[in-house]
Image (tube, rainbow, N blue to C red; front, side, top):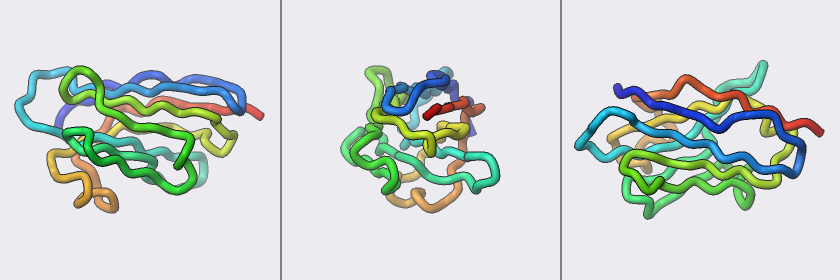
Length: 124
């Protein structure tokens, strides 16, 4: 497990955009797949998006396809989740996650490292 620093949450109106950022602040030689999960009140935590360690492959849950874009940051072991045309149903606590395993192998598995979570609220 490693520490993840997550930021970018906030309160926006439907149709607006937010950009989440996640970073592993400590020096590391490992390459990490990175992604986000979210949890709304009364619901299970769900997968949102993930990107492979080299940025070549991205994955999204159906409800955000075409609206959200996950990408690697310019610094190693960083990632961004650009959320456009947001909807009230996007409201949740968003948790950044990272793992040294191939992203394709962990999409439906528990990730090893987690951020503290950031609140995203979308008003109608």
